[in-house]
Length: 237
Image (tube, rainbow, N blue to C red; front, side):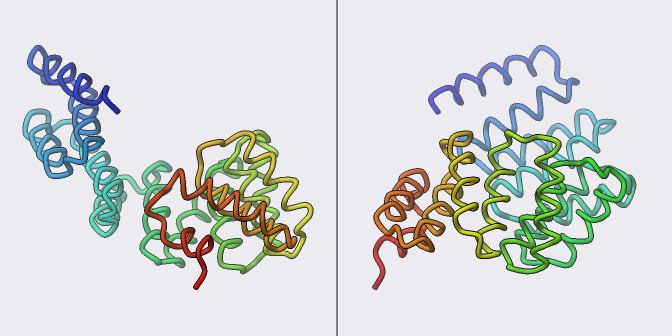
């Protein structure tokens, strides 16, 4: 947005006054990264490490986050693993490691991390949903996936991402009418998520409602214009 340069200026001025506050460095790096200046953001994190080495854990964590935001998932994974070597019980780091492994296609590693989190925190709704969605998206362990997502929804029943996951596992189980009902709830909650509209399109298609499917995919593509998979659904060869 147009606010990013102003935010960058603000955080640079703040650091000029006091450069020993970790929040200033992290916020500056994240704002710079939002402006698609990946290497500059990494440089800021490097400066932070030299200036306040006592905050190295937070700096390494957000450096990994920046790698992940730029789809350098291998570097992000390495960063999270490095942090876990000194703090193996850090739930947030393990969650990020699990999601990064999933993005790398390292399914068993991701599964292990989310199971570890759920074992330690049985009411961690984000981990319950993530693991359930991973299973559903692959069409495996669908009964377990449904149970995991239901547990997440019991904690946060209005969460659009959880509702999408629930609709998706129902779709994978062939329960298309119920899947659509849940997906409509998800759309009401998350109006700007292209994945939800993409899923809704697939469900409509399964119900032979092709025009509504196309409308959903068109909305998904509007929100994510570079998604070739969605474009192919709208323009099949």
